[in-house]
Image 1 (cartoon, rainbow, N blue to C red):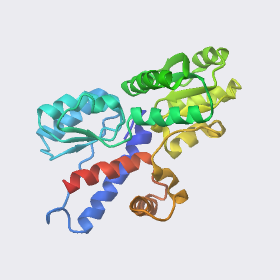
Image 2 (image 1 turned 120 degrees about the horizontal axis):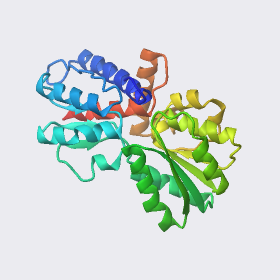
Image 3 (image 1 turned 90 degrees about the horizontal axis):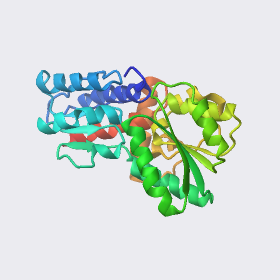
Image 4 (image 1 turned 135 degrees about the vertical axis):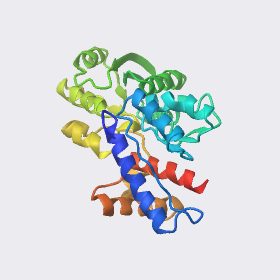
Length: 288
């Protein structure tokens, strides 16, 4: 809820609190009210482990939803498995479920799937040379690994790979190296605020090639942080953030519309991808 991961955790917390109200107003689960306990891991692995231990040993919860990011999820994966505590993560790293752990699950689209969509886009645009710039965390490493695995078979050359720290605000040095190699596109893999600084840095350096972000920035916070530099950015994401552009028919449209309306009515802002992850994770647990 706080720290660098707050653009993900805050909407997830809000969705959880809203769902708790909705479920209890409808009679709870098996005739009992649901209690959703929110712990802030402050975007650090240490706090994630402390929160997880507290939830398992003191609160005696029946399941854990979250954390918001891959490093914090990986920090508690083994603990939840050993305790036979169902963990439904809101993070997208492939490593969360590969290798499989029988009590550990993940809801977001994996980095493997998201990179696959990016490769399809690059092929459609006939782009044959790309550069990557990724956050130096397990999420960034996962994205980089998938880019390396999927670009080459698709006939696309990865001409440069740069990294940035999770709290870095200036990527000029890395972007200058990339610019000199003249790639056809730049792929950035991370969660806010870093990717917004990459977008602003590319605009400052007059880098006009397409910038493709990961689904880790699929919310309004990226637009707010990047400002004008967000114009033209492409990214793969779930349908929730474009719910008003979807065809009227279909079960998915109905679920998305109901959640988007309820979230906007309660919080006076649009639901984003991350609020959607909390929605899906919680409803899986509640149905179980």
